[in-house]
Amino acid sequence: MKPDIKICGLKTLEAVQRAVARGATHVGFIFFPKSPRNIAPEAAADLAEPVRGRVKIVAVTVDANDEELDDIVHLLKPDILQMHGHERPERILHVKALYGLPVMKAFSVREAVDLDPVDRYIGVADRFLFDAKAPAGSELPGGNGVSFDWNIMASLDESVDYMLSGGLNKDNVGLALASTRASGVDVSSGVETAPGVKDLGMIDAFFDAIAEAGSVRA
Image 1 (tube, rainbow, N blue to C red):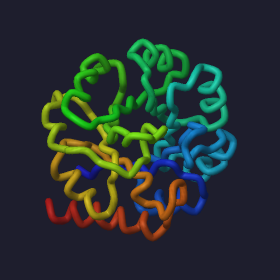
Image 2: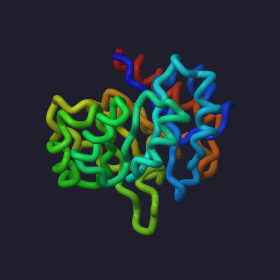
Image 3: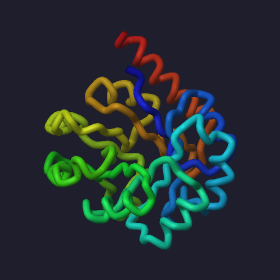
């Protein structure tokens, strides 16, 4: 089965269109002021509209309050809300009831113990995303260009449907898919020439690497 592919932190129409043309299943827009990939809901809506219905539009937030989510949902009309902060299960249930949207809960991982809280979210979050824990000094929960030991994912309950993120690029995405049960991958910094600056050639190379990995497994 082909993996879902999410290109995240998009800020230009050219990058959105190239991602979709190459086979992205999800496009992500980040609403977190500290991120170099931060975008206003109005701008994200303009970028998403030409590809709406062809891919899943994901709104990525970090401990956003209801007022912030109201603006994002009203303007962007996302298909999925990705919660990348310290949101508790109760918060996720509240948000799902408020907006009627599925929620993907992100976890920051460095070692096996970081997966312990996942059990509390099974049956609450609709999908999971596992990203590398931020290095010391970073204020960003994701998009730091670092990875983690994917072998620890084997300890997860097999019922957990998840995307893998963290330091993925054209050189390691094939191994990431082969080493885990991830049903999808999420890339941001791995297709950038600088933080927040997507490169069309790097997007192409990322998709080429996934296609090559798939043909090898087949």
